[in-house]
Length: 302
Image (cartoon, rainbow, N blue to C red; front, side):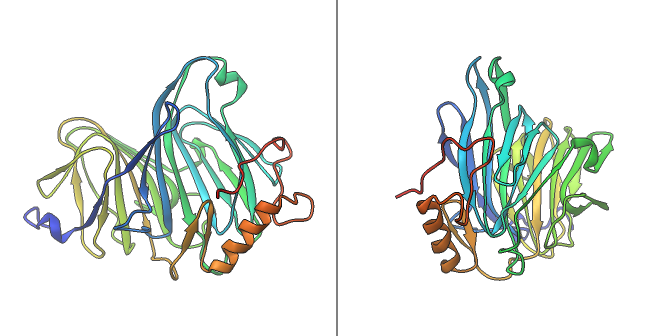
């Protein structure tokens, strides 16, 4: 791609996040948006923090349900304790990945551990949802944890690229996926450049920190740049280090409905899940609570 190529010919949308303050914990949501409902299979994208917690404070996301998706938790700082209805009890730390496949139904909670809560700490990272293809949206739920050492890391002067999901830059993550996609944590020093993977139809760049430049146009942190398909895209980091999340994949195999924590290809699946959660029949119903965190739950919103 020539540097004289206009920015308009490579960028389809520039998505600005919607910020939320959850009691001192900042979340910036860029997907879904009115301009772009999904990028590849990614239907939900939240940037968390950075947030500073005083001793005694932390995150308490009570048990809640999901269907039709896989959740991806990836941290830059801090930790979470994940517990789910499969009996999983798993800590996650920066550079590792928790990949929870909801399928026909799963319940989980995420909380700051007592050890970390007792001292001051910082939390930042990304949480996203990947819609499962229709052939897998009602599959049995599952959970995978992969340590940072098990995820491919491309380490070169001025750059570090960690492949979280799928295949990119000739590296493949060990996480089991169900449709072609890529998800990469890219850290670039000032003066570095990077060419985006071209083999996927839908691609996006989320600027977590720093500033990048594409065809002479600067883009600040907090934006998601949705790229047009089939065009080479070079990004440049001019003045200071930047941290980017690169994501995309094949288009979804049809529209997805997103309602509360549920994702599905048809309304009937969502209606059934809502009914089951409201009934709260943890013994015989569609959902059960995590064995180690079953004293409370988030009720179905009105």
